[in-house]
Image 1 (cartoon, protein in one colour):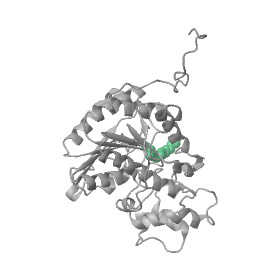
Image 2 (tube, rainbow, N blue to C red):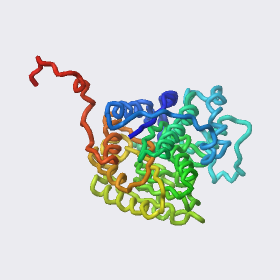
Image 3 (cartoon, rainbow, N blue to C red):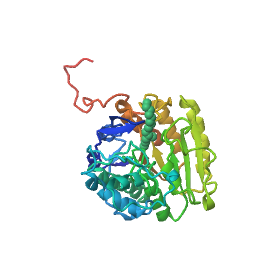
Image 4 (cartoon, protein in one colour):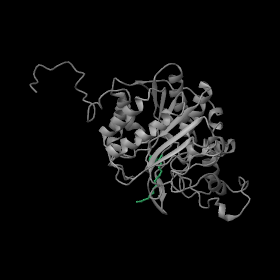
Amino acid sequence: MKWFSSPKHLGHDPAVEVWAGSPGPATEVPARAEAIAAALAADPAFEAGQVREHGRGPVERVHEPALVRWLEGAWAECREVSPTREVFPDTVAHPGMGAELGEPVSSPLARVGYWCFDTMTPVVEGTYAAARAAVDVGLSALDAVLGGERAAYALCRPPGHHAGRSAIGGFCYFNNAAAAAAAMREAAQAPVAILDVDYHHGNGTQQIFYNAADVCYVSLHADPDRAFPYFTGRAAESGQGQGVGANRNFVLAEGCGDEDYLAVLDAALDVVGSSRAAGLVVSLGLDTYRLDPICDLGLTTEGFRRAGGQVGRLGLPTVVIQEGGYYLPDLGINARAWLRGFLGLDAGAPGPPDLTAARPADPRRHV
Ligand code: SP5
Ligand code: ZN
């Protein structure tokens, strides 16, 4: 399978995020993508592809152009007013304020609170370039699929599924999966589907396509009664207008393990299968892992392989987009297991690659 990544993700390197008012070390860090890249680079089932720039057009197809303009200059315009190298909002545009909301013209900090909905999505100097590159990574994987590959993997970072048409949040700035799905729909001139298996509900992706009949969004995630993003992701949210019926949410109970999870995944895949989709975008979050530090499900590495296998058996041209996943020691093997499962392979070597395996045999070794 071809896979794509960009070194520009390294410039998005926040040291700090804020949860429930407390600053702590950032969770969504460059080492995440590096861990996955190392696992794929060491596995001959994967071949690195070339990332091509696609410009602003595909970003502005799924985001308000004013959001893109703002993010481009946000860090620079906040340098003077932000006490740290990470820029956070201090006052968020809340509907209860009763104001006629438009993008504020005078205060840089007001603009942050206008476009950003939480305190865990810092803007640093390299954020915009990294977020733009992540969209290009996804679109380059799509190009490979449009060129005839059965599937391709986009190692997107930062992730994207919490970013809405006019909002950043949940570690997400531009919605990589939405941009890929919109471009896929355009190229195929046919309906497409998005399967979102990140632990968290993809509120941004849901919102962007909520009125669309030809992009079916299907998500499995922790019940928002207990998990971020709290305000979206319930089973009753089924689409609006033309899009009624093209949005499906499946909620997972705390501690849900492989067997229960795979049964729900089967039901979700039935929805995708009957959606008339000509292609599939997968939002692949690995934060459903049993050891994930910020989540509470119980999937194993073998569960990821089986999940990938179930998705692969749909038989659709597929672009896999990386979303969350925060347990660094096993992030690489988990991504590889899911993707190898998709290809119908075993999960691969359990530990780090054996670098001695490629060397000629040493006659003095008797092990
Ligand atoms: C792409 C992605 O996976 N974004 C996830 C963003 C959600 N971050 C979780 C925030 C949960 C805050 N809970 C605080 C509990 C402290 N023990
Ligand atoms: Zn997540």
